[in-house]
Length: 427
Image 1 (cartoon, helix red, strand yellow):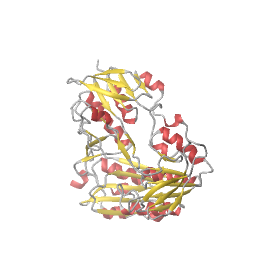
Image 2: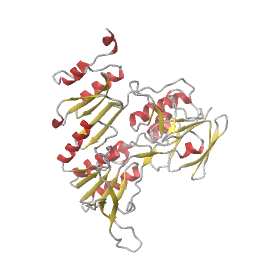
Image 3: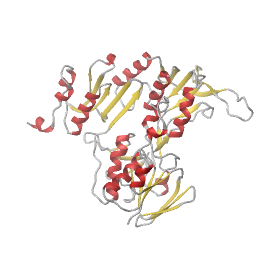
């Protein structure tokens, strides 16, 4: 029987182990993670967790009994530091704690870590990042502290805006500093960006675009040798924004250390093919750590890196099939979501290469959709507070359908009724 080693106790890693067992694989499976926690969901960390509404068990993916029933050995709190493979694919991994693990098949689901800002003052007490459970555990009581009245969020992406919304909901004075000329500019069109800018400002959040930060300021420590506390953020024009707490959310960096060690091709992520195979033809990888061929049937060709739960799960299924020797190819309609206070954004498809945008509904109502077209065909949509329309678009894209632009504009007709499927289009 073949032993499978999965490095990374995350959603992608758990999914690979689960699919292997579902497909009848009876060999030993070891799922190894460096964090001390059982595999957990990341999305709630920037929402319910830091609001203080969730307990650890609320975000855990699987119970201990689940792993035991499937004979999956879960190792937590021990980082794999070296991996060696032979020409036949078998190898030995060594953990930081000194454990040696022999394996026949290897899967890398190493994820990504928070991108660090090379700024003066990031080591002050009160400066936080938010990517993993320990960071969320540290941030939650800091946000709840009544003495922390002023919160500065550096980064106007999803994590930054979600955290800003939570902080504002807790009664904090919140400022978001975004270096780009608009919010979430890498992901959504100007229409969606403009809506979120106005919506967050209406809720009392101060948003500064094109922000240029000089340094983070801090006061002297009260005890000799102790770390000083953050007091503000200084911009290049000399403006100082008071801060009792700073959250830095400027993206992530894929964890590729073991891939580098194995000599795999890495290019801003572990390069894999549509079967989730790395460049050695033996190792599979899935999730945030990978750079893969665009899996979206309506997408523009080339490689892409997707950071989402949906991608981690779907790519992991393909990785498991590849480990079992099955022919598999990752083709899927990506979808994402972001809860920013009472604003729920759901995205279906990928808008890269769009040449036309249709805004359906009134953004001022805070319930509307932005539909993206390329050469007259629907390729994606941003949907705000309208889950029915999100499901209609997602279903249409999954089935290869489209929604004519003129029909999309007509809000008197349910979007689901406007979908044109391939057979109907041909007829």
